[in-house]
Amino acid sequence: MTNREKVLSTLRLATSPLDDDELARRAQIAPRQQVNQICRKLERDGLLVRVSGPDGKIVNALREADGAQQTSHEDPSGAASADTTPSRVLPPGDSSEQRRAERAMLDALGARLGLVLNPRRLERPGRIRVEVDGADDDLTVLVECWAHQGPAKVAQKYKLVNDAVKLHWVGSASSKPPRRILCVTDAAAVQHLRGRSWQAQAIRDLGVEIEVVELPEDLRAAVAAAQARQFR
Image (cartoon, rainbow, N blue to C red; front, top):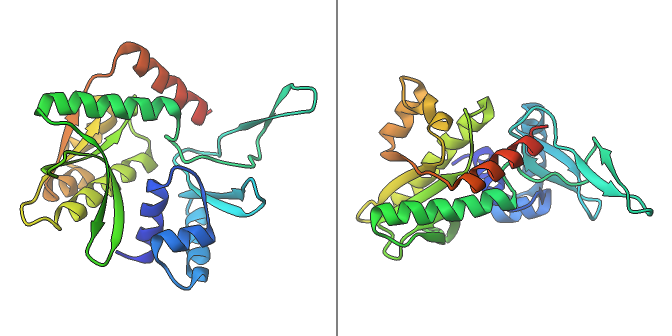
């Protein structure tokens, strides 16, 4: 895995934006200046945003839409005002609605497979730690969830390939390879992976399956609303 891939993978797993120091520590990249250079290049490529965090340090967050999302700030009178230059940008998909959806997805998929699936942090050789969205106790199944409604945008298509690579890589450490599953809530979100695209063939060659589970109507609507806020 290249340092660029390590940076992208680490940001994908993070629950909040990371500054260069923390990103270098988690990705195990030294010297730290390499991370700064990689992130600046990724920003130029349109794959992430670098903005000022709560403590004034520059933080990095994956970007999957055109333009950073807006954040709101309250003035002393209590009125909220829009600011198109955010002081903090969360990675796309980082919302309470989508986290609840992912929990529901694991429960639905687990019921289909006859397993109990929960988020897991695993350790690979070399003491490299990696998180997966779901796995059973015996690690016979590894799952990455994507709570998304509607077709995937361009950058999101690469996210799914990244998830598939992670599942393949984590699973390859086992003497008995587990099932590796990309779990989604809308068949339209993975339509590009059903055909003859290179992404579709790559995921098949990696031995990664795609499972579609249905969300309850209220949760599906909440996810769609969260997406609309993020991509506004």
